[in-house]
Amino acid sequence: MRTRLIRIGIIMLMADAVYGCAVSDEDGRRYISYEFYETLEGGGHQLADAFISVRDICTEEKAAFDIIEFPADRLGKYTGPDKGRLQRLSASEDLNFDGRKDLVFDGINEGSMPSGNYTVFLWNEEEQRYIWAEDAPKWYYRIDRDRQRLLGRSRLSASDEDYHIYEYRNGAFHEKHLEIRTKASDYQGLHWDVTGQYYRDGTLEARLEMIYGEDGARRFFYEQIGGGRGREELQIAGDLTYKDVSRIVFSEFDFYWH
Image (cartoon, rainbow, N blue to C red; front, side, top):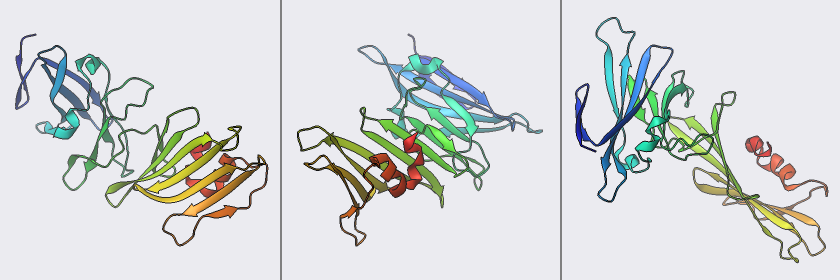
């Protein structure tokens, strides 16, 4: 493919392939993402540059125009131009609950599969433009508007799972993470022990364990990490499952049970 000189607004770039997608919002702004690919010597393409143009088509005077540049260290995370046909840009959700819609670019967009490749741009009221949110989640599956949080979950196996809560406070996203891991019990492997670890902004704060004894009975242990309380056994009714106990101990993660 012959390299082309592409001119968009005041930007001129050399590219072998260019892909884009456009969306508009109810306030009269139009957003177009552009991806510029170079051809590799051994075949295939490499993303060389990307940006999003913003036009306010409802402005009475000359249309307001802005360019949002992609962070350089994010460019390498996106797939080849064969994905360019998919709608990867959205401007329909308010991710930090400030009353303004934000921009999300999905670097993979495989439909229903979690991409882990979101790039989020939040509206900055002071600068009157969109700014890259470096600490925004790379993926979330649902927006909980009632409690103003983003929810994420992933399954590593039939029983090992991760759950995330992202809350925007004081100009930054903060993460709560519940990590659920299982292993065969030490007693003949007839049961599965379960450990849940609770992290806040990457720091381990609590642990809940369910361990089977030699008699097949379940025992529950709870530990606050660095909180002055050591590992202690919880007195739990015999018919309660690990999820039942987690509902009490890690009550914020109520979506874990659905």
